[in-house]
Image (cartoon, rainbow, N blue to C red; front, side, top):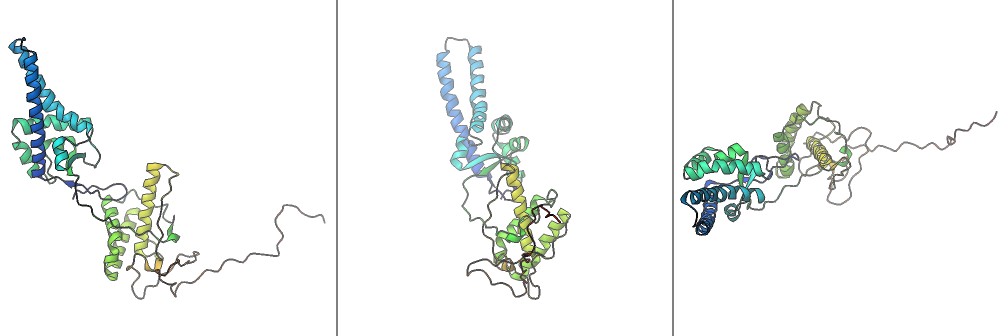
Length: 321
């Protein structure tokens, strides 16, 4: 699996193509290019039979460069990395960051491909692909591209549970610029799989990730928030910032209903002897539905402040003495 991570901490499902499938795609492309070259060259020679030998040789060289070099470059540029051979084998050329290639990428790949594929009969390309960790030939290395598989088995994406609603906006002031993509990916993978872990193991993993995240942000993790809920809240804050950056400051981030904080994540509640404590001044409101856990006994409900009844309304008018 290719280790390409987006700004939303999502690992792209990009699998580098293996050497056999790439070789088959190249052979199909060369076969199509050679057939087109022979057909066009034969038609040009018949049409220019009255010209001298030098003119016919120049036209043959021009047809070679146009069809065997310019043809693949044009096809990859217009199809965004899908030539006929790659389309038949389910492959595609993408940039190192997972985006579609442009003309300069296809140009570098095509020019270097003339040397490592046509002139050396593919020997250099095979050696380079075997040496590279992701199976890239020299054209891919210099162009900054990667050949990946498009036809991959459909896998079920893990659901990231949202944080409790009382944590909304609490971490809006954190500096997340120093958090690496690898830590974001680890947090997201943990949140999607924590329901499958033992409660003690899940709790210890959440504490380690929360400590690492707090060290990267420069702000200590709050003691009144469970580690898993803290990770989910900070991850949601980062996704909200990415959404605002991509779609504008007025973009709203849809958040699905949150589970009960005392049983956040289904199996990562605090171990025995560690009661759940809500933040000061925030009353605990239990969610509706039979599937949620009841209100914990150690949660103190905050009474509403009394409303004064005897004071006259402030109108700004003072009665005369």
